[in-house]
Structure formats: C-alpha cells, structure tokens
Length: 313
Length: 313
Image (cartoon, rainbow over all chains, first blue to last red; front, side, top):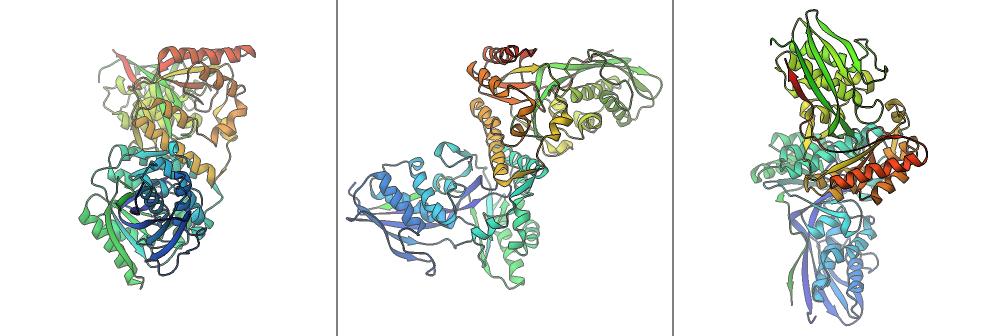
C-alpha cells in the first residue's frame, strides 16, 4: 500500500474480427498505451502530462477516458488519496485499434497497482467501461480483450458475460493503418438500423463457423469465416477507400483473410506465419502508397496476457 | 450390385437449437423413419406403400419427398433400373422434428444401399435436399444432421458448407410434442423480414456462445445460449400456446433450457441426465394435459451416427 508510482501497459485491440460486430475482439502483442500513476494526497485523479497524442486528447478529468477510469478505480479501491497520471499515447487515435480502451485500461491497471493491486481484472472491468463510455459508448468489445488478453466474446458488459475463446497457435496478424481518421461515431452512423432476416442468418452462420474454427485452430477457416460479414463491412466499405485492392494485395502476399479492425481504417490481415504477415502489411501499404496515402504497416501476434503492470516503486 | 431390397433408418432432428435459426441442428437417437427400397426393372422410383401417416402423405412421385430423393439418388447412381419404396412413417408430420427430411434421407440411403452403396453421404446430400425442397425449401438445417448425425452447422447447402460440431457427453433431451400441427409455411410466414441491428448483435453473440459451450462440453451454458434467441421464438411464441408454462415446468423438473424444435410445436428440453430428461418431458406433458391438449413425451440422446442402413438382401 506504500507505493509512490506504478506503470501499466494496455494493448491495442482488434474488435469485430469481421463478422463479429460488437461481440468479438482480440488483444495485440503490440503496440499499446502506457500510463504512469503517481500517488497524490488529494483525492481523485488528474492528468499531469500526455505524450504522443499530438495535443489532441483532453486534460479535463471528466472528459479524458484514462482519467475517468482512474477515478472509478480509486472509488472501487476505497482510498482517500488520489492519482496523478502521465499518459504515453502510443496508439494512433480513431484508427480502429481500440485507442480509448487502451488508455482507460492502462490507467485502471496502473492505479490498482499503485494501491497494492487488490482488485482483480474482473473487478476493474466496470471502471474501464466507464472510461470507454466517455468516448465510444458503454460496451466491452475492445475493453474485454485489452483487459483480459486473448480473444474474447462479449455477450454483455459484466465479467460473467465475457468469454475467453481459444487462441490458435501460429496466428500472426499483418496490419496497415492508413493516415486517415475514421471517427467511431461516423462509422456507427452509417450502419443500418434494420437488417434482413436472410442477412441475420448468414451473419450467425459465419460467427458460429468462426468460433468453431478457433476451437479447431484452423486459421484458414477462421479467416474465411471472419470475411463472412454481410452487414457491417458492406455499410462501412465506402469509408475506407481501396479496401478491396488492399485485401487482394494482402491475399496475393499470402494472407488468408482481411477485415476492417474495429471501426477502421486499420486493416487486419490474418496469416499463419510472421513472414507472410509482414508481407501482407507491406502489400497493403504499397496499395495506399500508389494513391498517395501514407500509413504504418505492422505485424504482430495475439497477446494472451492483455494489460499488465510494467513496474511499481 | 445384385441386391433386391434394402432398408434404411433416418432419425428425427431438432433444427434451430433456439438461437441458431436455419443454421444449427442435431440428430436424435430416436424416433426415425424407415424406408424399404426394392429393385424394380422399370427406371425411376415409385411408392408402393406408406404406413403410419394416417393417409396424409402423397403417393405421387413428384410430390412425395422420399420419392423425389429416391429418384435423384437413382440419377446420381446412373442406373437404368428403379426402386419401389415402402415408407414406415414413424415421425409425426408438421411437428418440428424434421419429418420430411427423415423420409427423404431414409429413401436416399436405402436406394443407395440397394445399388451397392457406392455413394458417400456427401454425395447423397443433393438428392436429399431435392426431396426436402418439395416440402419445405432447399435448405439443410434438418437434412444435414439427419444424414451425417451429431450436431451440425450449415453455412450453405453443399457438403463443404456442413460442419460437424462436437457433441457433449451426458446431454439428454426431453421432448414433448403436443397434438397440434404447426405447418412450416405458417411458422415461416410469421417471421419478420427485417431485424434490428441490436437484435442481430444479440443473436450473433448467443450463437457464438453456444458453439463455444459445445466445444467446452458445458451443457448449462449451452442451454442458456440456446435460449438467447430474441428474433425467431419471439415471433413464433404465439403459435405455441403455453410455451412459457411448459418451459417453467421443465426447468422446475431440472431441465437447463427449453427451446422450440424446428418450427414447432415440439418442445425440446436440454438436460444432463436421463432421469431429468424424462421428468422434463413429462412435466411439459402435464402442463398441456391441464388444458386438455394431449401429446407424446419422449427422452432421447443425440445420435452421432445419423441415417444408416438397417439391412440389405
């Protein structure tokens, strides 16, 4: 209980996995946000510094997702003292990599560590969701994999409604994040309010196949099932120009399937080895380079660990 | 190739499994239809006798699901001679137990056996679907589990789109079929053409959880997931009076969940032992008896074998 500071890492996450809109997500090994929490005598949480956001994130305690999550964590801990936060923002904003979730989760885990780590991940969940809600609504599709790691299915927002799915060995993801922001609010606004019953049947079939493929560790079938989305990608594709060209290029490079990560514009190529994943990311980068759009290509594995404490002092 | 007659059994099936409308189904150990096929020198298939249908099934070759499936099988076999069929109809019609699928599959398997069983189940699939199409449309949600056995996910109507899911040990089903027909056409007509995006998300989440629970052999979670349907049962519940009372009674008797089998009116209670499954079936029967509705209570296991040849001579 006598710590003066703690640092935590929370990973980027890929939500939806194509067909699993609002219910499936996975944690990446990297990149991720880091939050340092320092003990302060006054109650509550404040932001003292944000690094890496290009000045775009708010410092106000009631607007910053990390600060809201930290405050909620302090309430759960029942302490009278507070926490001063430094956010090392390493995830691009509005890129479809769960940036707000990562900041909220890193802050909650850091504050918990600062005060003796008495809360479990399940107990931290509501605090993280409260932070996420300030930016993109009270849902767990990014928060759950960020906090718990691995691949998660969320059937609700309580800890017993978050289900850990198996992570196939050998899965590697090739990612490309074009330099264009797709705000989550806009990406949600283009979705249809109603879906045909036929489309619902196709969507449930693909999701069922996806979960079955995960359990059988069949990455080729997993990727095919992920691409089975007939509702969400159809509505969002126009927000991400050159999606089909990028998909074709990644597959040409050996990727088994390509989906939009979260609300986009990051594209996620599912591969079964690192060389292919790197090539897939670079192939997508090359497609966008041709039309003058820059961006970052990455390749990384799924983190089964999720958010974790980097150090306590 | 010198057989003169062959008999095959094809089991009753429970389609939908609650939330898996049009995509999930399972084969019961019993009851099932039996078809006997006898060699005839003229080409094509004819029905010589139907037993157990109360005179309700057509003898006309182009209207009888078994005869159509038999004809299609003869075409696949490429033989110039034909088959004379006797149908021992043991499944109640329009009861939600896949009656038309069972007759079609039993006929196809019997005709195949009559001519040396040279076709695989996968090769028989189109013939069975053709038979089913005459009565309830070209879809495989009953045909697939009936033909292949076990629990199946259908993402389409070709053999490579039929996925065998794991069958948990210890699962036993308590069934009650009230004496009232719910024609499949009416049960489909009450379904909404459009579904809310929120409902689609809830439906995909429940289906994903169901498949995950199957792989983990967690029957309690499986049953809870099956009951997660917010689209189809909602629309059909009024076709099956006393559904909620029957569900409550079955659960009181120890069932873990209750869903409508196929288009109904058979109700299917998911249980983890035989004693409970029998009690659940009888508890549902008692609810209907109170309001003067008779019907048959059964309890049975899932058949991993599906349709099979009973004998060849």
